[in-house]
Length: 216
Image (tube, rainbow, N blue to C red; front, side):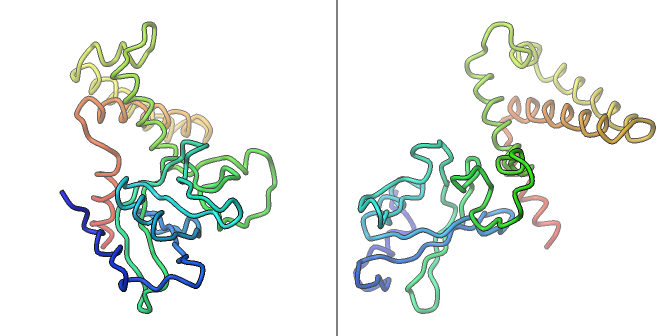
């Protein structure tokens, strides 16, 4: 099946600069946060369209490179558009981890670096993505001794029951325990939710889409 973006490779569709490059802005498809700015040539654009992941042209190294080739934090392309002058690209993506090489979600986060932890702490969305990938891996590999493996072996009934129990723990913590305890119990709840979603083959992306529709 041909890519819907193949038309971008037509010679007169986009206005590349004298060096054969065009700026490409990456934006999170769900949160709309601007993630990074890179440069593409025709070859890297073709690679991006063919693979569904973002490829760029490095002006310093003078070669193509795939975003995530060293970190594993690939950028899954959701859509590609261009501006009114056809000399800049906008790619909506779903990042598989932090986008910036510093470990931050976005290259445009210029907040003061108060602690080492602040440099690498992912947003909730990035954490959810990472959690779901790990749970998916556990489901397929079923490593011996893993708590997640034991949950999958018990089946959806027990998984749903455990999720319900964690929901009660969150409610109790909200009423009578500390903020730290409430956060901890909520993390347990989300973990069990990810196991339940994996069992039902549902992704957090689907929940994100439903929430955005409600916001609209």
